[in-house]
Image 1 (cartoon, rainbow, N blue to C red):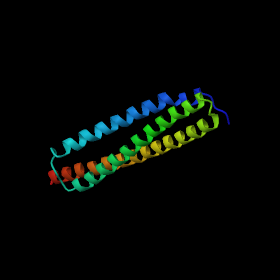
Image 2: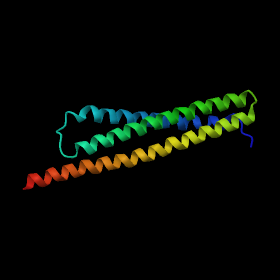
Image 3: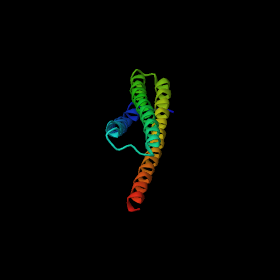
Image 4: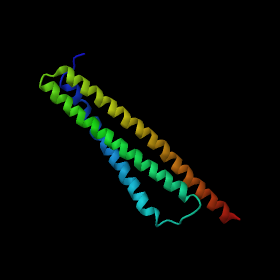
Length: 133
């Protein structure tokens, strides 16, 4: 299969926006963690801390895989530019695999984020029930 220089270049905007979204998720999570100690500690604190640690690790993997995909995409373009067509095609394929891995980590992080909201809502419901009694 022959690809030209424009094929890997089409991923540039997508990968750039994806990395921006990952950075925003990281900054939001960092803010939550920094403000966590200020909140009142309760029974579900251990579950929340475990959840936050998992999410941080997933975001780290997402960002690393996204940057690797971007790097390999540029490397593929360079190889194609230097007329190493087959090498460029293989590097571009590896770039796509890195991007898929990054997206899969993103899905996992979203699922864990939803679990975090469930833990928080359970704590709110527990407090609400105790206040009514």
